[in-house]
Image (cartoon, rainbow, N blue to C red; front, side):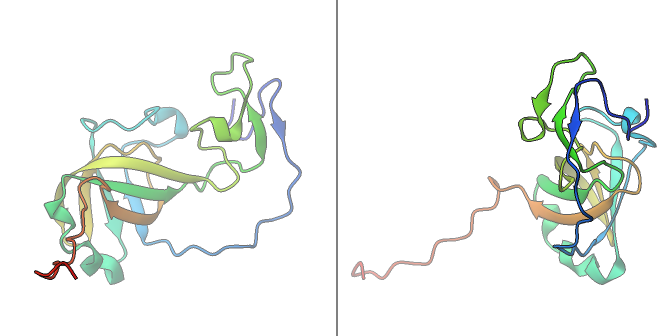
Length: 160
């Protein structure tokens, strides 16, 4: 079965070409996974080392990220179909709505992985926990939300 086949019971929407948003890819994910079948179902923080290779213009944007243990990586699942409304994720005939699944098949195929930061090498961030195909375009990298707490402004002594 190829990634574009529809399983029994699945339903696709008839959609015009998408032209309502533009993303700026910041680089590519380098993973040992050559196909969707090779990818782990969910990334594992003890998984293989992978690299987030940023375009050189974004290298300085990594400054300070290495002080965090984890980051959230958003990527564009560029080889996913975008038209399924109902899916049978395990090919067992059980159908679920696309928005009730973490399947890469979605109207806007944005992937999200929480990764463990291993080290930075210039414009490359070595991480563990990705679950995407080698060469997947990167959208954004953010420090783990729970670890990032901006400092509160100092309060005046009189409580004002």
